[in-house]
Amino acid sequence: MILIPDRWREAETCAIRSLVTAAIALLLWELLARALAGSYLIAGPLEISRYLADHAELIARALGWTSLAALGGYVIGNLAAMVLAALAILIPGVARLISSLALIVFCLPLVATGPILRVLWGPGLGPQVTLAALAVYYTTFLPLLVGLRAAPPNWFDLVRSYGRGGWTALVEVRAMAALPYLFAGLQIAAPAAFLGALVGEFTGAERGMGVLTIRAMRSLDVAGTWSLATIAAAVSMLAHAGIGWIWRRLDDAPPPLILASLPDGATGRSWGARLNPLVVALVVIALWWASMDLAGLSRFFAKRPDDIWAYMIGGAGAGEHRAILFAALSETMMLALPGYVLGLALGLGLAIALLLMPGLARAVLPLAVALRAIPIVITAPLVVVAMGRGAAGTITIVAVMIFFPSFITCHQGLKRTPAALIALFDSYAANRWRRLTLAQFPAMLPAFFAAARMAVPAAILAATTAEWLATGRGIGGLMALTASTSDYGMLWSSVVLLALVAVAAYVALERVERAVLRRYGAEQLAR
Image (cartoon, rainbow, N blue to C red; front, side, top):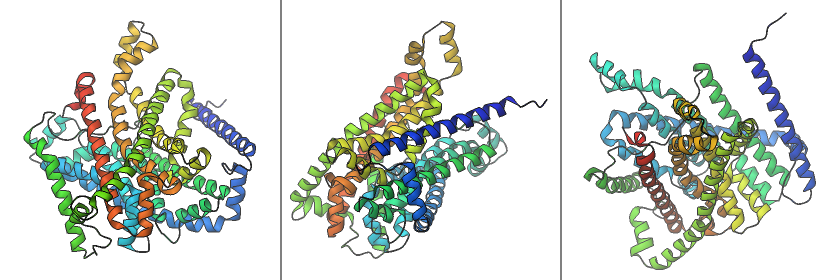
């Protein structure tokens, strides 16, 4: 008689459940597609399979081109994140400046910077690689910085006792402690790199998945659009799973919860804290100006800070320009804000529901990962076709973009409640609701605020993408129009304005987070 280990039986059971769940999902998908046949909304698995078989060579070439750009951006962006995180640790005096600059660049809207990069780089892979790098570096930088600070203090005492300095501590202690955080960031960055490459191809590339997607959407080729979306999601999921597999081979420990770190420095309003925004602004302006001048770029398309100042404030027609910009921005924000709130609320609600009904987790979590992997530049036009060009379509796109990462983060945060605290509530026979409200929900708050802050740029990206590709309204539609008419003053001003709004919203949420955590999680504010 052969004895099968329990863990093998458990793995076999999980595999069977996953296959059954996938089969049911595909069947429901096919039935829905047949029910909506002729509506130009959805293509089923069978139709997608036929399309992929008929266009296999074309899609393979496009996929190879996009994957090359995504891989280049993935490597460059993650290397930049590692260098920035190391500098922030080795030179603590510039940590605040580095974190602030990284945040500002991350808040630049991809759909707006794409046309600018296309003009600066010209034809080729340059814009796609750059946008892929911009899409991934912050998602690795932030968790890596948290991980580099996660080592126990007594380890550094040991390093100092041997007469070694900060570099030894970084390589021998901090780097080892940060590996789980690094791999978690690398997993998150994989789908983002593919999205960045696709956005770059939407701005005038000659080949790639993005080019095929534009053609399919413009010709109302539903089978083609869904086929490309399926391939993009599959590649992103495989990259995400592959990086996770590598980490599991290196370390069997469960992945850590990645929380957005609060800015360096004391919680009070010291003079350093008051001066920091001014210093950051001056550094950003200096770097912007110097990079344009050193590269010898024409002011016609490579605008400097004084050009934006004249266009929006001091020059002729500035009042009219401001009126156009702020009207478009208001229209976008009126849709982005409800979608943002709805996405966060749905993510938190589903996380709580799974905590109370854990049996649903095996079915919901794979679906969440799959839907998160589909690039927003492909889903946005499909949602708008289904729901119309009004407010409902854009709000839905923003909510979908935010919902899944918020759900995953909150779900992991609820699961990270200390076991001793749960045991204490169990010893008093507390019901599930009291345990949730008094123990698990407060323990989840840092994760919730991390999701809320990171969702700010995502909400702006989703709203402007929907406007750029589908509705033609708001500041996204304005940027699409100005990119096609070469009105680079309006395009650069739109980029600056959106970045300022994103940074301001991020900082405001950070203030709220500090106020809440001072009462419910003061240990999160300690350094």
